[in-house]
Every structure is written in structure tokens, then in C-alpha cells.
Length: 144
Image (cartoon, rainbow, N blue to C red; front, top):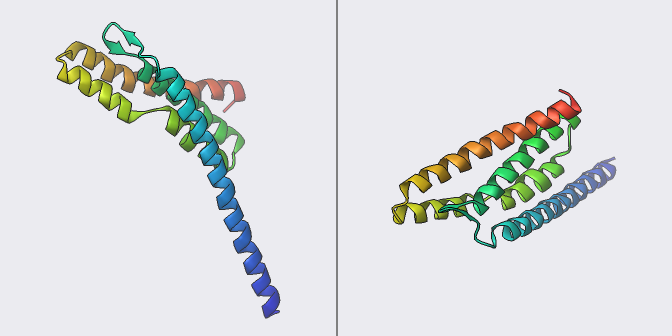
């Protein structure tokens, strides 16, 4: 009996280690896809007047996708590994607070205060609105 118990414990430990490996794969795959998409969207400098919109675009798109994923995850009771792929990996790599901070500091240092205000309000406000919009749309489609 003691030998059997030890075998079951070792088997459970191996499964737990395998799951961590699978979680890493989900996280890495989402991260690579999100980072690639961010690079492709922000690579060409996109400006609307003096307002940088490339970073705004990835932040709003990422927030929308995250909101939609949260709603789907709640509706369908998705396994946590999908959160690692979509929320942490993909959306975490797609959106970028550091680039937003850099764009904002460049506007501040250049004395473009109106553009700075628009950039900050747009990134924060539109990202929150996109997240809520994604949740709302998925809940309307799937049903809450």
C-alpha cells in the first residue's frame, strides 16, 4: 500500500510538471503573437497631427480583445491556460504602457501640452471603453 501511494504521488507530480510546461507554451505562443502584431502596427510612425496613434491603436485593440476574452472566459468557464495565452501572453505583449509613457514624455518635453492631454485621455479613456465594449459585445452575442 505504501508503494502504491508513493507511485500515485509521483505520477501526480509528473502531471503537475507537464501542465506547467504546457502553460509555458500557451504563454509563449500568446506573447510571440502579441509582440509581432504590436511591432507590425507600431513599426511605421503613425501620427494624427502631432499625436502618435500607433501605440493608441495597439492599446485600444488589446483592451477590446481582453474585454471580449474576459466575457468568453466567464461564459464558457475556460481553463486558466487560455488566460495565459490570450490575456497575459497576447494582450500583455500587444499593449504597451512603456511606449505610451515614452510617447507622452516626448510630447511633454517638446512642450506639446495639448497633444499630451489628448494622448493621455485617448489611451486611458479609449482603452477602458474598448475593454467594456468587448465584454458587452461578447455578452450580447453569447448571452449572460
